[in-house]
Image (cartoon, rainbow over all chains, first blue to last red; front, side):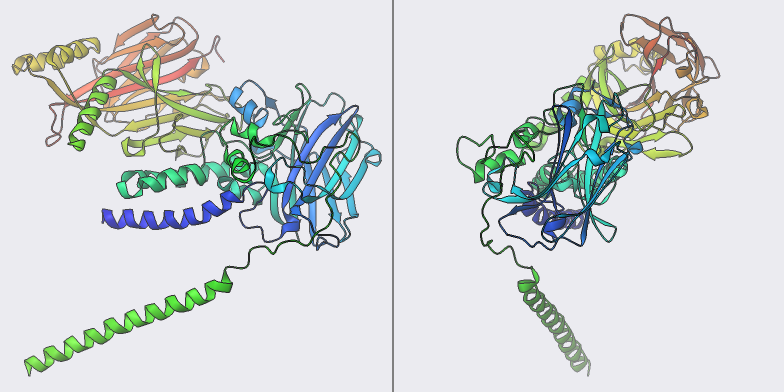
Length: 376
Length: 264
């Protein structure tokens, strides 16, 4: 019975690991786990002060060299800002990882919403803003820009970018703390979520991509309980201990994860990730220093030495701040559907199952006939 | 051979940790509504503890009772410290309870007797004397029965009710409200435990401690001289069940809470 449990646990974990490993290796700003609709995939969210203004940058469609048009009209985007949640800064771990501690994650709600949609030529078809004073003062940009993520895989590539720059006076006077997150939706269904960079991109947070941030901590606690039971089983048997180590690294939640995925920005402190996010912030190095190193490792694996700590193209000092796009090029074909080969694998497996069953049935009948013959 | 070494190491570890207090240390004793609170398990003396990671194989129960939700399992990550997390309701006092499964330990006769004296287990010394066992090593199994009270906006009836630990300290008035006259009951398997030595240790200065013995109804009273975080503790020892491989079974009850500076 114990062996059966161990074997079952091992099988489950092998399957989990198979899912986890490739996803982790694609886990820069590539989320959800399976990017079915790249135009819905949020790649970056930036928020930083610039003189008397705040700059908000929201990017989708990572690592592209494709030219217009893009099949982007089915998707709607929203950038939300919570201005009411209490944030504290006395927990050094939370401050280093998330920019602060949100006292009541269950109370996060948007006070300001930027509702955005794009035409196929990447011009803005919708730019509604609620909750801000004088939204007419917002300076907008939309179009292709250099993919600004400091990471070798995205060097020489573009992303679809939406930039909004607004006077600080659009926000309530004396506003110090901001919680930001972006979502993409199609027909009202949430397809992706992005808060603090490099969080929901990690495998262990994938479920958060489909939930509002006020449900994130509860969801993680629920998940943690299930994972603990599984981890207990895996650590119980010699056979499955290596799998326990793999899942701990790639799949299971960690003790410092219980914070909602939002970007915290407080103007009490200088703007450096994770307090807001500047274009120049080396997110891979900063997140590695607090316990999430996969991007750092990948940047060594895929890049040269020493590791690039700045973007491949200088950012601009003026609006829209991201570098000019790279020239259009034919894109290499992406991964094909598993079912190109999976269909034939399924047929072979079904055939084997059929043959196996038939063989047992045939041998069984033969032995019955023999017994009957002996009795006669 | 490897197994024997592991068993010896486990026994040594258990021995090292055995005659030590065990308590729950929350990240805050007065959380705000919705706050994520971590629950660390600590083993040590004088309120200086080593972390005890969550090891599900050693846990009989690890629960929290807050608001109207009833008792719920505490979430956590295997082999991690802190051992658990919960989202604070903060409306009324929350009760966290942890019970471990029994672990075996064997102590040299002198050490065993010293620890029996330290925790006021005179009846066991007498029993060993009657049985002429005082020169025998002390073979026992021990379990932890720890509780912590985390303050909310209002007092909670749950704080004054037994949660069902085998050996349990049950306050008669919710101590998180600020009454320095702590009255409580010692319960062993839900029945009054008479003549139990109960000691309260002050977190900021462990030399500040007060003790009392429970009466025939299991009731004891302690006057806590300072506001702040307190650990109240008591050890119960009974004959070990047959087939346990031990002579004695000890149950280590503890209760942590913060006494506010003035009554709420």
